[in-house]
Image 1 (tube, rainbow, N blue to C red):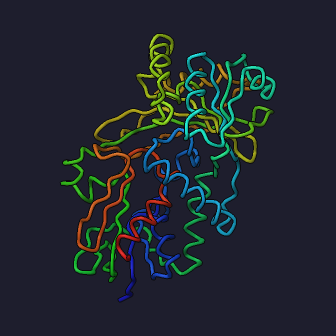
Image 2: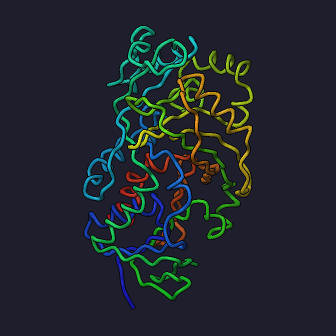
Image 3: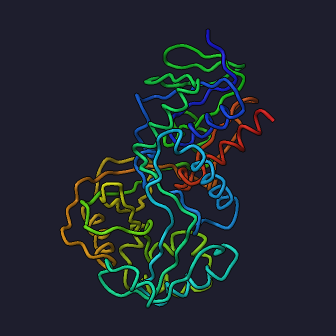
Length: 370
C-alpha cells in the first residue's frame, strides 16, 4: 500500500493549493478526486484573482499572497496570465464617490483614480460617458477552465499521485478510505467544495452550508480590447472593501431605485477578456439548499443589459452559457475545521477560492506540519 505525508481530497483550486503548499515543503502528496477532472466551481469562474475590493481583513492579505503564488507558478505550469489589473467604472456620481473614498484609504495604495475626462478618453469602447474610474494594478486573470487542469498536470509531473474517478469516505488513524481502497497518509485535507454536506453532514448542518448558483456567459470578440478586467457600479455594493466606504449607502439607495431587480438577483457586472478577444461576462447569485440545474433567461438579460450600459457591442453574440456553484456558510469567508487530529476540512465559503486558496493552503499545511 502506498504511503504519503499528505492526502488531499478534491482537485479543485482549494485542493490543488494544499497539494502545492505541501510539494513546496518536499512532502509526499496524493490527491483523490471523485471526477475524472475538476469540473465544478474551479473551472466555472472568471479566473480573476481579485485584490482591490476584498474585505480589509485576512481575505485581502490572502489575496495578495495568492496572487504572488500565481505569478510564481503560472509560467512553469503553462497557465498564461491573460490580463493584469482591474478597472472599476463608475456610471453614477455616487459610485465615483465610493471609488474616491477607497482610493484615499490604505486599501487604495497603488491604485489610480481617473476623473471623467481621463476615463472616457482612455476607453473609446464605452457606450456612454462615465463619471470616472478606479484603476487597480493588483489583479491578474487566468483562463480557469485551462489553468486548473494544467496546474494538476504540473503537480503530477512533480510527483503528486492522483487517484481520479474515486469518492473518498473518511480518514481515521492515518488511513483514507475511498471507493477503490485505502491510502496511508500522515495527514489529510478535505477540500470538497460543494460536496461538503455529503462528506460532513453534521458540520454542514451546524454551519448552514448551502449553495450559491451563478450564471455566466461568453460573448464573441467585440473588436476592442480592455486594459484589464472591468467591473461596474453594482460591484461596489457587492465587494466588501468597496461596500464598507461611507458613500456606499447612497449608492445602494440609488441602485435600489434604478436596479432593484439586479440587486434582488445578486447581479454585478464583471467583464474579462480571453486571449481570442472573447468576453467572459457575469454574474448573478442565487442561494438555496441544493444546486438546481436551471438557468434563468431573465437573469442573463439583466447581466447583458448592464454590459450594454457600459460598452459598445457591435455584434452581440453569446457563444456559451453556464452555471457555477460554490458553497456558502455561516462561517465566512472560510470554513476550516479539524475533523480528525491529523485531518482538516477546508471550504472557501465566500466565492473567493481563485483569489485566496494558495494562501489558505499554506496556512493549513503550516498548521499540520509546523
